[in-house]
Image 1 (tube, each protein chain N blue to C red):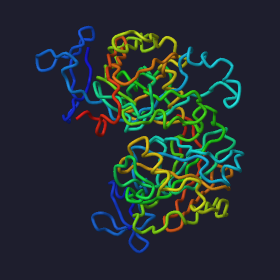
Image 2 (cartoon, rainbow over the protein chains, first blue to last red):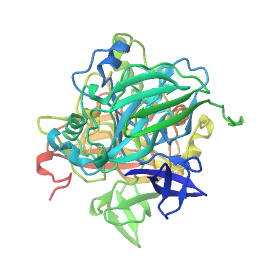
Image 3 (cartoon, rainbow over the protein chains, first blue to last red):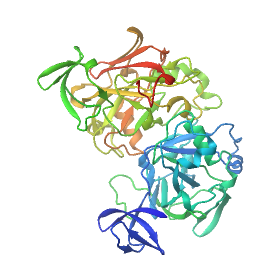
Length: 255
Length: 262
């Protein structure tokens, strides 16, 4: 099942995919362009992985890490499918990152990698934008670069685990204004999904609804205001996002 | 002085007069010593910590900040998240992971956000504050600040908070509060928020320039240099003048079940 959280006619609904449309929790069928898409989950704790694909580590001139490079994200940064990401003025390099996001289904502590899939609820797509101008070498990647408001589109769907037989073999693609810019496969993760759950749960408790963004393959480039960025993962979803120029306080935010 | 707090197993937020010198709370016409009440963490928003925001903490790095891997001193506030699994209340045990001899005690003033704060101006920043609490930003000692210290700072029970949120207006100047850390009643560290690189208003302004803080979120203003260490069995007390007193004991994690002594 593909599940969504949407706003429709002034109320928030849960919905499932039904023949290309959305079936709201009250049974009404609506078109996907008639709703405002919200992030399909509201994670309490959101982990993200840096440099978890060898090709991406190379393109940024980093060695692949020996231990997962994990950072955390706050709730302020998440937005839904078809939403707009604000690019601050004067920024010179802001790139997308297409990532498979794992949604936890149960409390997990000291889970072995061979049992890790039992703890998963499902999967969604994340676009983990980074504003490279704001990177500093303290707790890098720092929150100013990675946790800007609106800079992590998530969705459209939460896809049930049962519908994804092999999450470690999914094609990933990013299109900017329709042009294919990034291409990879989840099979090229350095630390796979089971290893990441085993690693994190070896030193802390993961909870239902927690989110793990598993990293991005190579092929990242700067994006500008006006660009449409589509991050797509085979069998999971096609997450559409548009970048808009940020407006200073007190000016109209019309775009 | 009025403060808000939560007791374990009780849904509503309590509000009461607190007596900081007597370490007591007035509830229902009676007076209770702090140690008699089953405290829960007073808020449940996202907890953000600030790295290197004490002048002494930055100075302690010396010229290292100009060398690899840092290459320059920090420009914007360097934040980190203390995730939900780290938060515990007054009196709850701080789990000591197996194989770790000692924990670093990070005494921090916690600024509790009262209304949604985005791109806040420095001079208006306190209007977005509900109050203040005491935080213990516990870490496994680590020297390198280059990569996010999740394994060192995000363990279960590594962020005691409380006991209460002291109302904003009871704290005359958040940039002039003495902080003391006692381990087994012995004073181990003393500092003051006068030594912050970014004082409270400035920190709120600089953080909300790039990310929104929501009601119930807590911004820890930083940990002073010379953080003391605590080992199994140590009673750790952090006092912040005019805000409160937070006490927790370090207990080996294998003696706990889901962070609780049973």
